[in-house]
Every structure is written in structure tokens, then in C-alpha cells.
Amino acid sequence: MTGEQTLTFGEYAGKTLSQVPEDYLRWLAKPEFKTESKFRVPAEVQEAAMQLLGATTWVKDRLCGDVDPGGQTVASSFIRRINRDG
Image 1 (cartoon, rainbow, N blue to C red):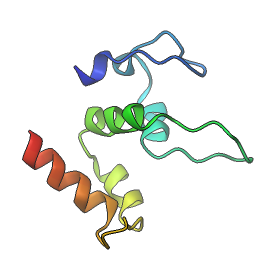
Image 2 (tube, helix red, strand yellow):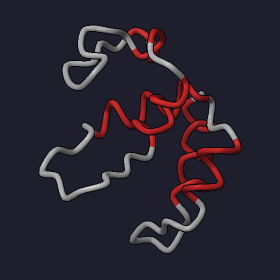
Image 3 (cartoon, helix red, strand yellow):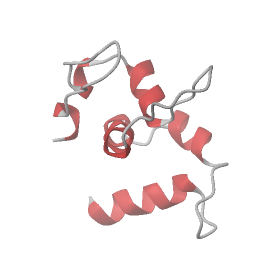
Image 4 (cartoon, rainbow, N blue to C red):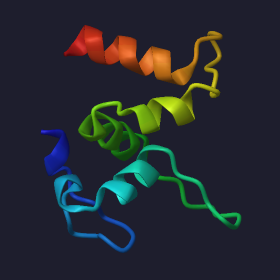
């Protein structure tokens, strides 16, 4: 279950995704760092956060500009995958 994934890093380490504030979920879904960082949010955490957010308008709006190698926006690829996989 997506919301039950436990974070192993950051301020909310030890908490499940369903226990963290929505603004942190948004950051996990589309992390932006103020300074250069070697840390990257693990892909499975990013995906789980997006799923938990339910692909809200906030997430879709911010992903629409990101294009994957196939030329599709990340948001449209993500939405198609959710529709396909349920």
C-alpha cells in the first residue's frame, strides 16, 4: 500500500507517507533543492508520493514541462500509467 511506505531519510524518517504533511509529499513527488546535493529522493518514494497525492493539479502543473525521452510530458505518461495500472 502506497501510503504505508516508511521514509528512511530526512525530517520524517520513520514515518509513513500517509503520516507526513501534504507539502512534504509534494516535495517528495517533485523535489527541488536550494543548494547542490548528492541526495536524490528514491524513485519509488517519488512515485508513491505522486500516487498518494492522487496526481493533484499541483503535481500535474509542475510536471507538465518535464519531457521524457519519448517526447511525452512526464505528467501525461504518469497519468496513462495510473489509468493502465489502476
